[in-house]
Image (tube, rainbow, N blue to C red):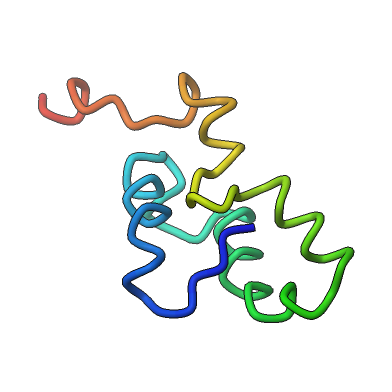
Length: 79
């Protein structure tokens, strides 16, 4: 789980979300990262779950794994 103590630390995660088809709205990964970020510091189970979803460097594992399906095709949007 990427722990963002302030808005500036989440820039990498937000930049990745902006390239995702679901970036305009909070997808389930972004939602749990944002809502349970502080709680996971105290809970082993919630931290373990979030560790599988968002890595410490801010990499969303869903986006990384399914990039071909989730990344916005900028060429199509330019038309």
